[in-house]
Length: 141
Image (cartoon, rainbow, N blue to C red):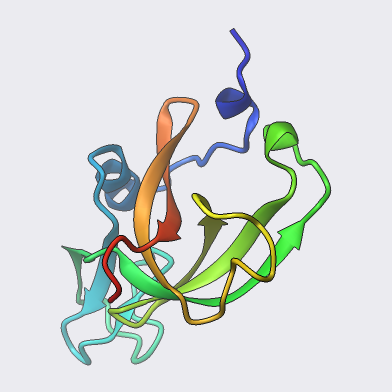
């Protein structure tokens, strides 16, 4: 059966991102940290974007951050027809990395989407895969 969740773009894990997507399936936002320079980073890759070291380790993020920037889309994309408008956002995590995501659980208006607002990770299904989205934090960070 075709549902809105199955029509949305679904990620395809790669060798570099398998651990990230496995974490999402378990409700964990996993990031990488370089053991040479201690930089936490996102998107998953085999070398540190800061110093180039290949000595990187996975860790579970606290899943908290702040709204860095956003755009409100009023145009329906496949799978988002019933959610127009929807917020496409860049969230800056407490650990430092920024990631592109959606903001859910709040009206998608400039009045409700305040820059620097505290957010926390949640997960929603995309077919068989879970993807991270962010909602307003229940307790301010």
